[in-house]
Length: 62
Image 1 (cartoon, rainbow, N blue to C red):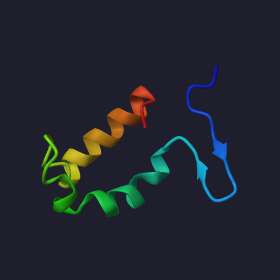
Image 2 (spheres, rainbow, N blue to C red; image 1 turned 90 degrees about the vertical axis):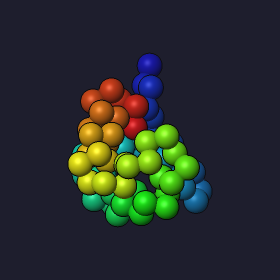
Image 3 (cartoon, rainbow, N blue to C red; image 1 turned 135 degrees about the horizontal axis):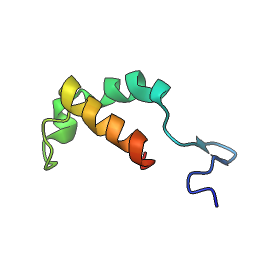
Image 4 (cartoon, rainbow, N blue to C red; image 1 turned 30 degrees about the vertical axis):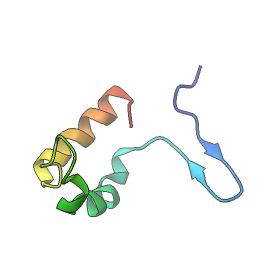
């Protein structure tokens, strides 16, 4: 069973995150306002986000 399939629709394609997605995702995640109300409010910092991103890839949870 594929736990992370690629889903293709008329307007959107959803696919699992891969290592090449880091720069684009961090470009958005680097805004501190996004994390302001989140328990991990320091994820806008590059080192913190890198750990979060790498853990997601390692566990297949992205």
